[in-house]
Image (cartoon, rainbow, N blue to C red; front, side, top):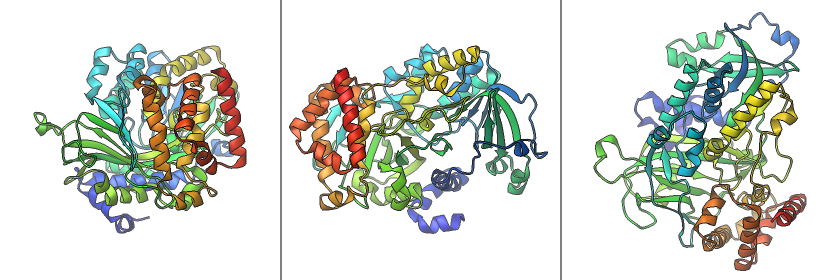
Length: 529
């Protein structure tokens, strides 16, 4: 698909990206958005059980020192595993279809959730503090037609994502990790002794090194061998067969009007979940807005920058029906409807986008797809399906999982059951998925959404009012995926008293089998409380 077609189909998106500096950044973002859209809907380009004939092909080019303890697929935040394992003395290789340590999202988190970065020894406490660019005072959730529901210490710290990834790359490299930029996973085969991984150079390597695209494509694939393959490919992973997803677009915007009204920006207030209308086009669109540091030349004045996101929840099987190119279509809506959310001569400074996958827990959770293959990050989908705190989930979980991986390598216990045992999660996550599905209408629930498009906002306003009434600590724990069983049950009872139709509306979006599984999980949670 040519860039000219994308510019015609998505004119406001293309125009906003074209204004970025350097000039080729916008074109690269358009190509990457198209890649994510196409590969999110189709993952069969990666072979998971390569044959002997394929592995013995003379076209395969083994790199020097091609045997490792661990191969890490994905050089985004999953690079954190490479840094930890290499510093612990393990031989590690990292590969990514783009430059390793290159991100396309902004990150917010609470200060307490950053503790594992220095507890692991990767950073000092002072270094972590320097990664925090700014911190706002209060967060709010607000749904169209409702009131503000304030909460503190939730996604209130702006993390310098670029510096964090750069430093992780430097630490991994300094510890001896081999970094293969511009190589994507073509296929692999796991056996009792290890995993054989085949990599294909990408066309992006040509753009980075000024070679022709044809030269990059015709370069021979590379093969390497590892005792363990860590899949940190996120939504593009061939293993990420999640049942719920959250297309997300936006970026750092400059030129916001300052003030205290909903259409203006207060630099001391973060907007965690905000809606400006009811269900449209079968989707409940939701905004997020977090104050961002000012431009370097504006350091002495109040910031007029905000990282703004637009997203919606969808069942994975219905996503193609909702839109053939979900991210690109959502970006176009972002620019078309941005003034509904915030006013000002808004300008895109840096784009941020991606698919955030999750599991409702109403079916079987994903396990390691094969022996010696471990899923982490968004590929594992172990974060909350309600708040989608993927960055927070990775930061909270990487250290105990990395310690477990080192133990498994030491004991050579790398079967699927050994790797699955590395994961633990709060029990309340077992039932949050049912609540999230009410924001992603099923085939049976769409008629209810059409007849009452504002009903979901009334329900959300009531639910978050219940959370706020339970106190700031409980409210914050709920949004940070840190709520225990007893507290969750208290929330469910309080929401039902305040909004008696809550379960009827939830059940309208679920199939009979999903209702049964959700009630069973809720009963088990009740018994644990």
